[in-house]
Image 1 (cartoon, rainbow, N blue to C red):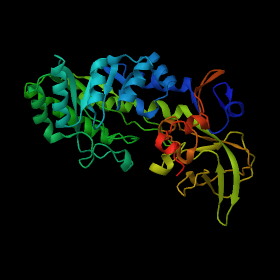
Image 2 (image 1 turned 45 degrees about the horizontal axis):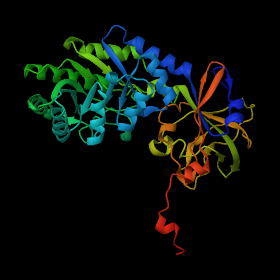
Image 3 (image 1 turned 90 degrees about the vertical axis):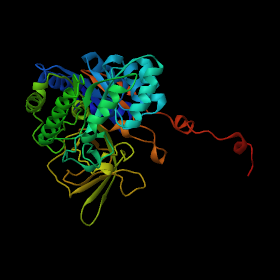
Image 4 (image 1 turned 180 degrees about the vertical axis):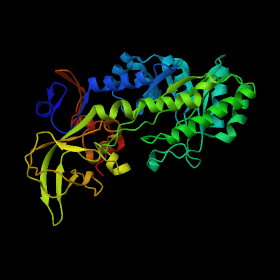
Length: 413
């Protein structure tokens, strides 16, 4: 296997395993395809930074003209550092601290998506204290079931996200009366990894209906933030039809004359990244094998957290000999430390390299140092060249994050 023009075996020898490998060409291709689907509509694309926040990834999207959707002060600063203009940044998030909002205001970001009445009051105080009117959206919860995994569904009434759509007219009127605020947009996001677009159609239709109702109240709503959520074919499903998605948006919102913001994350990054690991031990049990390799749940937590599926293939093509079904597990002392369960894989020997596919989204960005394991490197490939864009830190770096208080260090007991 190669990533663009670079051998994965050569990369494994150079940087060690496990490591994440990203294709710049794939990031660019996916962004251009998404952009092309909306070429006839007034759409701003703000990449959802939470999917993959590596500076090199963000810098590439910045060069392509993307804005950013951020959900924390750290993501905001990452986006700015990577060269994404402040006016193209949308600050989402279910709750924002005073410090986060002050940073957003000081940096002049384009839009803040408000998720509660308390946040509305806080933002009004901050804006009026600065003698400014802040452009805001209220994120509404349309009570639409995205029919995706419960842990990535965000648009049902019982979810913590957004403002109940029935409450929205009252809170928009309140926002219009508060000093320091200018409500100009309606925002929503119903969930992630949608391959069936019917929930989008229902949610977008409700958002358009709300815009009409707000305008009837005399509010100048001129923008609509439709979030992200387009899925990827982890299990070799038919790929999402972006033309159909664009047609749904045009059909449901075209008549209201709003400019639009879309916030793709997974769609732009998942396919462009893989996690490469090396087999350590193969245990043959009574019913199937346990292939123990050096990537663990701390490196890719999605299978444990979401029961997520990632295709896994040998880096070097195996022979015809098939093995018994295999569990692909890691070395961490947890029964939940697995990347795949009951997979049909060829016979594998210690030292063989595996490629865990569709790992460019919610992979490295969700990794941890559990069991005092070091964060793995991230590598970006561009044609025949490559660069480490996040190095593997030393154990001294890891241990050095902790501080022993003087009174404990001096004590013999």
